[in-house]
Amino acid sequence: MTKRLCSMTGFAREAGTLADGSAYAWELKSVNGRGLELRFRVPPGLDALEAPARDGAAKRLKRGNVQISLAIKSEGRAPLLPDPAALERVLELATSLAARIPGSSPPRAEALLALPGVMRAEMAEPSEAEEEARRKTLLAAFQRSLTALYDSRAAEGARLAEIVTALLDEIEALCTAAANEAATQPAAQQARLSESLAALLGEAGRARFPEERLAQEVALLAAKSDVREELDRLAAHLSAARALVAEGEGAGRKLDFLVQEFVREANTLCSKSAGVALTRIGLDLKAAIERLREQAANVE
Image (tube, rainbow, N blue to C red):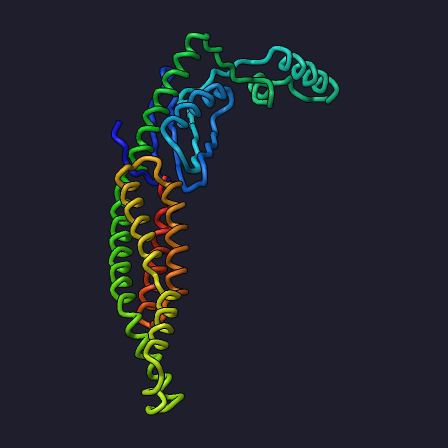
């Protein structure tokens, strides 16, 4: 099976008819989750379906909160038969009352049969072979619904892959802009320091200030504001994120971790920025990473 990037959001429905004419429908709904959580709701008497269905779901799905429900509607009605004991008690009581009330008529059969509890529905108990065939039909239908849910999550995952790739491209462009801007910081810092000295000492005092000392101060400022290490790490994280998108299935947890690393490096870059332009790029970078985080939260 080809690995694909999958979302944790999906829906599937599989309906059909059982051998006795009953209509059934499986519904599977999946949303985001930290792990894999399966919640089953099946009709009474079919609890044996849950264990094999749970095993099948765990083999196909890695993460997500999945609600799984089975509904069965019987088309036929069970035949109504009189309950001899209940009918005997009602008849005895009605006859006794009729005898005690002057002028009353004997109890009528249709009136007695209409009383609650006198008639009861009686269903024939299915054989073990019929029950086994019923379970096999329902489990086969569940497997088809599970495949449909996987395909639904994979289709959403394909759209997610496009969005995530576009965001990675945006982050890469911002990193390139940050590197270009960072390269101009030492010269800008030297110009600002010279202007500050001129403002404090005057032009004559600035002229007497040792160039070696000025160079030392600029070097210290440049070292404190050097963001090359952060940009190198961001480039490595970008490469790893692209590999995860290409790898596909099961990339969600690793992508979540990488986004945290993106955030850490972007925050450090902003704190080291020595210029307004680089700070603006850093803020745009943080905004793009936040959008990436939102999308990564949907990846299985």
